[in-house]
Image (cartoon, rainbow, N blue to C red):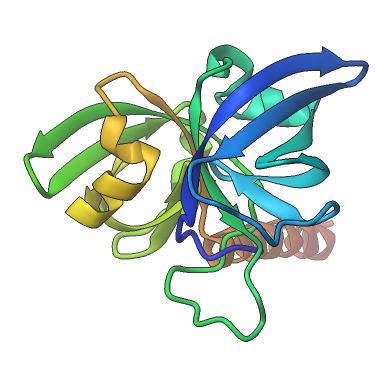
Length: 210
């Protein structure tokens, strides 16, 4: 589990398919000396497991499902810059929000306004994801915890402060850029509960009418 506060960025040094997995070698731009094999790490929002360490480069394996659900499958290359965050400690302050690292899908940047502080408007490829996004709620975009400004039946907007733009990959976004999107876990459970409750009520009503 993560907080959505990026520790550093990293550069993909190598990218190759290895059987049913894709193997990535990543070099953090700031040192992560205490990183260990078996630890979880968020790579642009996707929770992956460290499988190998060599000098200041670590290796992770990515399943096909992750490649299908993220922008990795189309846009990941050697030299790609990614956001990195290690799993949170139970003693840490939760300064972002609870982020699982389970990417729900891809969103496209449709508009971006402003100079130092920017407002970005994203459109999820799967319109159903908007059900888990609420105004003033939280989303994770490429692993970054952000607050939703507004949402409608097609897209949602977030604010990007100078600190965020400076220290992670979101500062390089342009109109048309693809990002990994994870909606708020609380919103997912509420949506699931409401759907389940509706189905249960319809089932009970059917029994009463028969």
